[in-house]
Image 1 (spheres, rainbow, N blue to C red):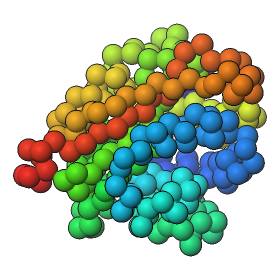
Image 2 (image 1 turned 120 degrees about the horizontal axis):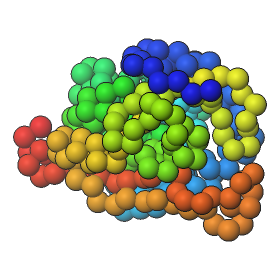
Image 3 (image 1 turned 135 degrees about the horizontal axis):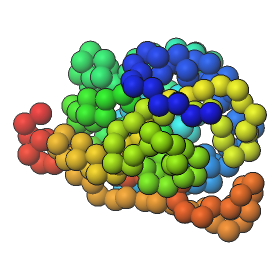
Length: 255
């Protein structure tokens, strides 16, 4: 059921999401993904409060739903993702609200000189084979007063919730590639596989600090009671973690 591959490249992970993309757009648009609608989107909205609404980069935009939702509140929205099938779906459904491109953030940062007011990475950092290179690319693409918003599966609670905490290869303190069935609470019969990288919280904090990103807010959202009752099993602890960072003044002036 679960596997611990030694490593997977961005291209290999993108191929997995090429296969998942048609399923993913149906999950979101049908309302089956309760977490997307009632946990992640409201939390992202909270973190966006007070942010300048000029330019937004949705890094790892997937099938483009969030980029499309924010297209009405930002002057410019660019969504990037290494999954070509995801971008194809995003362009087909939401091409009028955002500019979607097939690329990863590292390549984008090398070829693009534009800087952004907000960079969003929703459920992406734990899919990035190299956290440090991803975060350094974020730093290079942020305006001096720009904000970085991220959401991830909760490093401490997710292994227990998803079911691999007791695997003999699992060690909370280590960076581990985890290959597992792709599923959401109300959609458990998908036969596809996805890979994410488990990292302890300390590794995220250290990576942010090394890149000159200061963590301003950290959220561990729990669903409201009425929402919790919509799930097959009630939440016992946070399943996700979200945060807001800004670029340190020293890095802003030296970048």
